[in-house]
Image 1: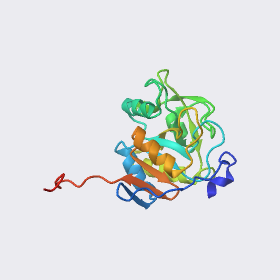
Image 2: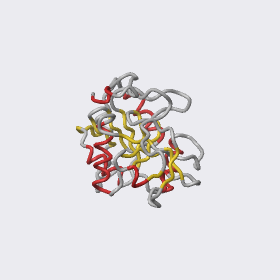
Image 3: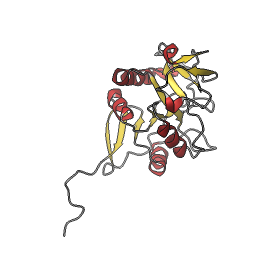
Image 4: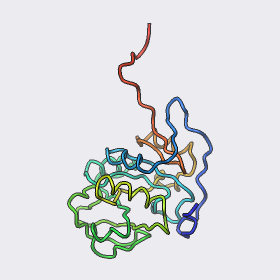
Length: 213
């Protein structure tokens, strides 16, 4: 995959060791516009593509992604991660657009610096002191995430998402489909991007009886 051109993504490839249960999940080819639509409406998505990141921070290949707009999203993400609800959530942003949303060292592919957030709309990624530790991405470094951010910008005007690591506390990045589905079912993820597939829970059809006699 193109992400291999970036040395930051030099871990193991994601292992599709099982197929999601077709009775419980719908598996479709990945269309980033559909993922952006789900995130816009409030879904929280586990994103696992290509090789995982080196180091402790999610850089866009093993990420939990969500819309950046509400404090409720921050609380929900911290509940998923089993962290205190006041803990900050980092943003991931298009590098070309980052000066619209942040001031300071806005070119930051490895999420090293704190920036001041300039938009009041980005409540989910703004800490109590008005800052965020931003990761910026370009097409050369991570084309898949750039496609998603551009699709989200087309829908909302904002090329920013919440981005926290797709891992179990105290352990490395999740790197198998079986572990990802188990994690999502336990902690309440709303869908999964697994390499080039988009996996969503099947929803009960309305108007159907719960059982027949």
